[in-house]
Image (tube, rainbow, N blue to C red; front, side):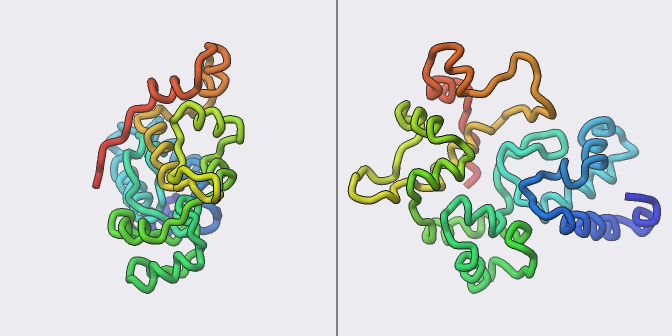
Length: 232
């Protein structure tokens, strides 16, 4: 951060991190993208260095208080085990709720008081769980698989294997997919996963591994994806 900022103590460093965060734009880029050198140093080379422990603590505080980290995200060299904060944008994607409606509802219930953009406007995940459950709407299949970042063919295979199941069993309406089920699937898939800074030899995607081994992708998911602990 530079001596001119660090000399004024933790609050000055936190304020500088916040300013950098707002310049970068989107939390989906991840802290490694927004603070490339600083984050890489604190999570890698100087991860266990006693002299850098105060700076790691400041970065940890900043991320926990301002970042909508997902289960499985890299958090200073360790995977995040559970959601602590949601953002308006991430919750809108996960629940199918319009972000403008979501923001108004959160503000009216006292869960949100922020003029930051939807991506950085964060609120307590546990405190709003019941409210979000009551607001969540079901999605059509296309929106569901796009929210999960998968292709139509990958989605179809996981449905055939019974890994992904619609909330409603009906042919008369399209909106039968619960985005919370999709998020639970991702959380289970990523729990305990090892973040890779770059692709290594011998590592492969689930879909290509299934083709190579001539087995169903659902079998790989069931074998490799432990369920995250229940934090409710």
